Image (tube, rainbow, N blue to C red):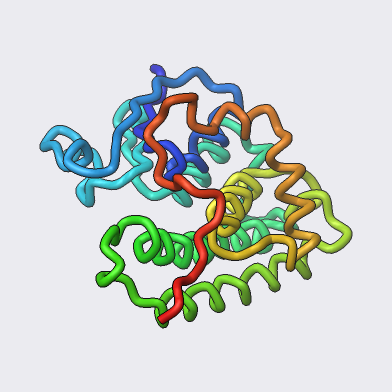
Amino acid sequence: MTLTLHHVPQARSMRSLWLLHEIGLPFDLIVHQIGPDLRQLEYLKLSGAGRVPCLVDGDVVLSESGAITEYLCATYAPELGRRAGDSDWPVWLQWLHFSETIGALVANLTLQHVMLFKPQMRSPVLMKLERKRLEVLLGVLDRHLEGREFVLDQFSGVDTNIGYGLFGAQKFAPLASFPHAAAYFERMQARPAFVKALPPEGAELIYKQDFYEVPNG
């Protein structure tokens, strides 16, 4: 049975799309737009929160990107995952969930800079605070990546999650301040599967700018 991934270009579902391309599995891709499209009754039966990603594999339905990473690796690509008992399983788990911490801050900054379209709805104080918190995490990642090609000793499913985290983080924090993370992200962007996960020409984008400055206020 063919897998189905529900996806919004540039959203967190890009992690899952990238991983599917890395694995080379056949799958159907259903592309949505943020808004009423995700609140249709049929979709809410799959993803109760009306969010992406949502992966359907027969009777299995998953709507958390970290869980999708674990499931796809364990089920279809064990070489990209780790199992309990593997010496680096705890490290794999740690960085998988660390990517979600990055993702939460990127989501907050995206809300403030992009989704709240009226200036009076935004909080420059919150933007600055969230950017600073993001930079702390980027510093942790930067130190870990010194002398490393990948997050672990070889490419794994964690890299799709951390790599996507940097895809979003670069919109709000200059990666030039984190040279090891920046070099790592350059390597991730060069992977054919990453390129395939990018929005096609003409797609509706979440991020319409390369970088979002914190306004004065």
